[in-house]
Length: 75
Image 1 (tube, rainbow, N blue to C red):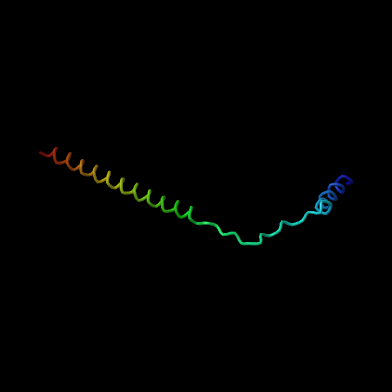
Image 2 (image 1 turned 180 degrees about the vertical axis):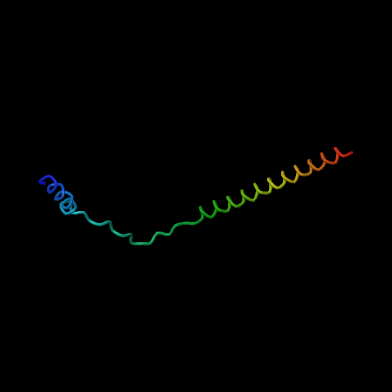
């Protein structure tokens, strides 16, 4: 019981003993630059469009090759 009271008094008294002061607020609001995220977003969109174009082109070519193979087999 005495140990619990001692630990409680240390936990409660520590900030008072240390005289902890709050962190001061910044005087000027921080303005973050959005250039980096906007460039990253535009690059992600461009790379996705490029990948989709390549995928559709490959798919079209595969369909053309498949159609040629079907017509050869019927002759």
